[in-house]
Length: 446
Ligand code: GDP
Ligand code: ZN
Image (cartoon, rainbow, N blue to C red; front, side, top):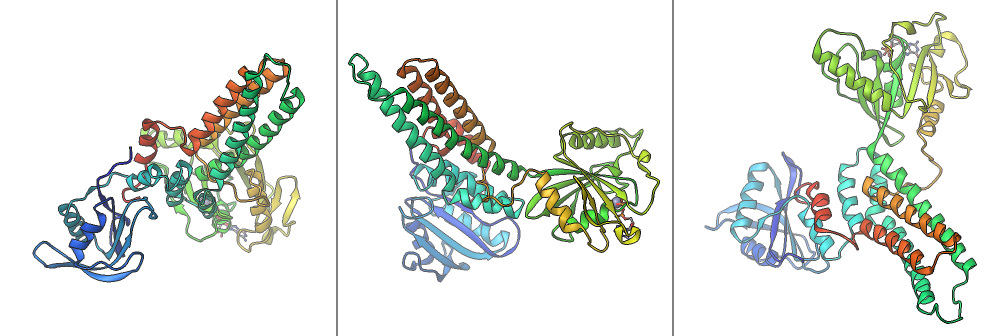
C-alpha cells in the first residue's frame, strides 16, 4: 500500500550552512506550500518567495520549487523550500509545515515512497543511501552507476532469461505425455550453462562493488624511524589523513583513514602496539591485533640505508595466512638503492623525495585485487551478493538435475527459486520486514 499522507523533513545535513532545504511530499504538499507562500511558482521553476507564519510574519525567504506528481522523486507532489541553512530557522519552517498538515518523515521515507510508487527499484533506492555514505571517489562512482539503474538492468536481464527458460521447460512438462520434445536436452544444458556465466559475471562485479564500499585495511609494519608515517602521507591522495588513535595507544598513529587512488583505505600502524598493564590500553591493543589479523594487505617497511634490521623491537602480531605482503625499502635517496620494483612484491622508494611511490601505489592497488583496467564495479550490498550467491546455488542444482536426467518440473522449480532470489534484489519480490530494515538506515529527508 502506498501511503497517502503528506510528509516533511529537513533534507540538508544538520548544522549551519548557506542553504537549508525542507522537502515536502504527498497529496497535500502543494496546498501546504500555497498557504505558506501566497503564490506558488509554476511547476519546476525556481522562484524566491516569502514564507509566512500564521499571523503573516515572514519566517524566511526561500527558493521554492514545485514538482507535481507523478514525475517527481517520490512520484507524489513534492515541494522543496530552499531557505537559509540555520537550524533555528529550519526548525521554525518545519513546524509551520507540520502546522499546515504535514507530518514529520521517518528516515528514508521519501526514498521508500519513491520505491513504492515505482519511481525506482530497491537497488536504486539503496544506491541513493550508499552514494551519500560513500567514503571514497570510486565507491561514489560505483553508487552512481547503480543509482542510474545499471545494476538493476543486469539483474533484470538475468530474470528475463530465467523466465524464458522456465516457460520453455513448463511447456515441456505440460506436453510430456506427447511425443514432441520441444526442448532438446542439449539446448537446455547449453542455456543453463550460459545463464550461469551471466550470473557469475554479475556476481563478480557485485562482490567487487560490495568489497569496495566496505573499504580496505592495510597494515603498515616496521621498526621506528624507517619512515612509515612519511610513507603513509605520500601514499594518501591528500595531506590530511584522518587519524583515529585507538584509546590507550598514543605512542604513534595506529589507524589512519586515507584515500589511495580513489579507494577508501584504513591504515593500521603496528608501531602503536606495545605491552601494557593498563586494561584500557590492553583492550586497544587486542582490538588492533584483531583488525591486523583480518586486514587485506601487509606492507613491511625497511630502512634501505641500514643493514641491521630493528624488527625484533616490534610486538609480535599475526596476519592471515593468505594475506598479500609488500616489502618496501625506504630512503633510497640516502642508500642509493634501486627505486621502483626490485622483485615480486618488493619496492624501493623514497617517502621523502617520491622515487618509486607511483609504482608502489599501483602495486598496492593491484595487491588489493582491484582491476583498474576493467569497468567501475557496480556498488552492491552484502544482501545483493548473498542473493546472487544463493541464486548461483539454485542454478547449479538445476544443472545437476539436468545432467542426471531429472524431469523438467524439478529443474523449473530450481529456476523459479533463482528467479525469486534475483527479484528480492530489485524489490520485485519483497516483504515489509525487508523494506523496514533497508529504509530505516537511511538519513532523514532522504
Ligand atoms: P616512522 O617512525 O616509521 O613512522 O618514521 P617517520 O615517517 O616518522 O620518519 C622517520 C624519519 O625518517 C623522519 O625524520 C623522516 O623525515 C625520515 N624519512 C622518512 N622517509 C625518508 C626518506 O625516504 N628519505 C629520507 N632521507 N628520510 C626519510
Ligand atoms: Zn610513525
